[in-house]
Length: 289
Ligand code: DGL
Image 1 (spheres, rainbow, N blue to C red):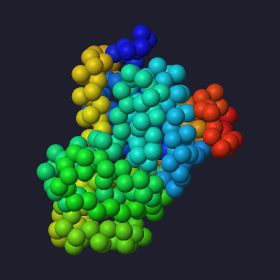
Image 2 (tube, helix red, strand yellow):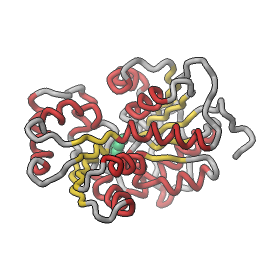
Image 3 (cartoon, rainbow, N blue to C red):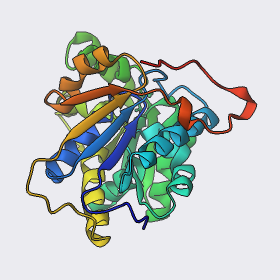
Image 4 (tube, rainbow, N blue to C red):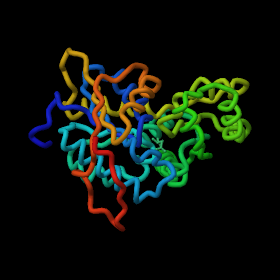
């Protein structure tokens, strides 16, 4: 492990934007004494409709920023980035552990003991087949049905968690899960845990288990840091410091919904200094604060 990494180093968490705060919240509940550095790529959200190549480039840049900040672990909170970039981020991080929501969601699904699993996520996550691959390699007998539910992301950001439009949208996306034998549904997107109650109500007549990747990634982080003897033994409350690539004000306004409370510190960070070699010259101007 790098010499500057210790038990008091922060945990790095990143997402395409605000949604990963559901993961930060779960990590804060499971590990209340840890300091967290969160990066939300608000300049380039959404990732869920972008190509794998672009999402990998963005994720690598953010990983380099977090490593520069001296994190002892990187948690990829974004399902789309988990599907596209876990391996490249782990290569950059060397021996610093990288964990992602897809692996953790898979572990939770296996623990549920259910054999018919549904997966919902962004177009990119579902298109990548990453949950299928991960679930099948854990248990080849599992049957998987998946569905992209892209409109749930803007609805969550708008705060429309259980109104008429949201219930209709959920019905259109999820009605095929009502009678296709699915026993557990993985909420494979940072924003979907916000709809837990509405989805549970939707399946009220024939309940299915909802699997929240945010909670299971927090458990994985605790286990992995414990094994490496990198858990913080500090008895003070950990801090949450957020960096965003654009519009800190909007982040702040939405943060409470995702986090359950206001974040303490929000900074704006340009990622210019953390650029990779851009293949094909993909680049966009970034907010420089
Ligand atoms: N964070 C993304 C995910 O979990 C959802 C938002 C986006 O499309 O960037 O896949």
